[in-house]
Image 1 (tube, rainbow, N blue to C red):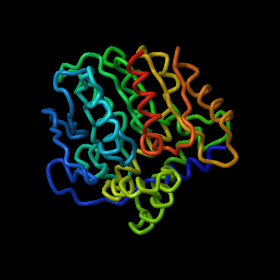
Image 2: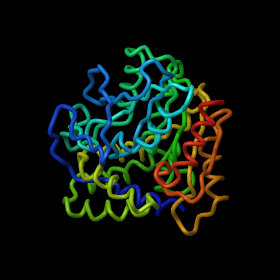
Image 3: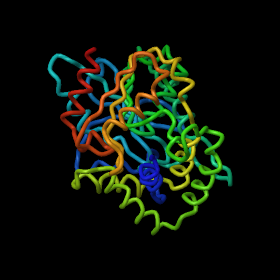
Image 4: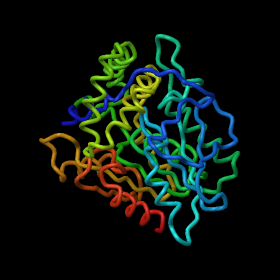
Length: 319
């Protein structure tokens, strides 16, 4: 039942682009932002900081091949609130959206990890910057990274919102009862195809995937631009890691209040009720998790339903 969603996700890998400065090409999509980069040395991530430098801290993590720009409306919303000061830390994963691959580079025939090391670097960032239990919001692969962070460093996360991601994406690639070990051969095949695909094939496939992941036509090109500017092998390795990572046994370690917001799976055969059932089962080992379906949206909820997403985020942060 997951195969159509999995196929769409698998296509969201874009060919490499040439980085042009120390942090890569920042795709501003028409915005002139006064953001700054945090003083944090890492070859896995760099961090943009916006808003009230003395405000409450929130970390926003984008998904596979995405840039910090996917959060711009969210940042504008948070920083415009009266009486609430937010210092917003936006993660940019090296190798995605114009940032040079650096420590995430894939140089051999065997893919290395991306999401797990990035989660560790965000943990180090929280410690070294002296952040006190920040809120963490992650979209898609960013949600996986957020789950890793909250489960493996429960003392560092104040609250966690996962946006349209399950804790074991590998379940999409096999029958009921599929395990990480059982799905690894499939993931290896996907890696081999994705990492070596010709550029033209990737561009065509990414366009098809974007059409299914973003309902709002005017927002599709910006996301596709990010994907075109991502390192192909880094994206392929990260996708393989998502397929083979089962975080369900780790969810019970999470102590931060957690909410997962999601949409109905993009498959005509799926219903709201079946989608709800899958999310309940996926997060069953996470005590007191809140699950919220947002309707009339595809995967990029912050693009398709920005007001509904912002309202749910506000309520979550206020609880």
